[in-house]
Image (cartoon, rainbow, N blue to C red):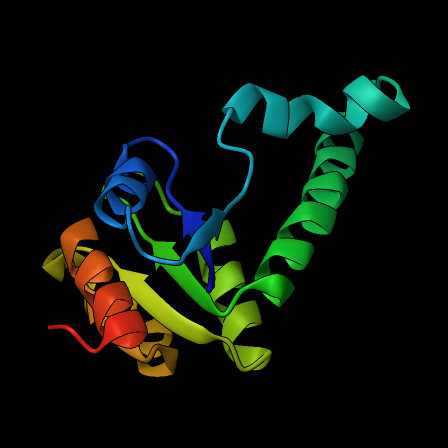
Length: 145
């Protein structure tokens, strides 16, 4: 099973899920989590831009190639909304996954329930921590709760 881990890049939640899923027949994928590389990949590859809009546009489009491929190849998409930043890209990934019929798991704190109610409504599961995602993967793969 392929699982795409999308969203917040400032904590180790991805590693917690990957570590907790050892022994399961799962392959993980996700975005580039090196913030500087993600922001600058376009100009690093296609040349510099004096205007910040076009700098960001180049990077966003290159990242979209990777993200779309990962989301389309995934059986399950996990989207984590963190505490500190507004992650518009995470909301976009959740919507893209839902629109393409992907099984969507959304992870966020209780404080974000109201703000993310529409995203949560599109998800098949809404959880608060990585361990709950691991438990879902075990249940889906092996029928263990």
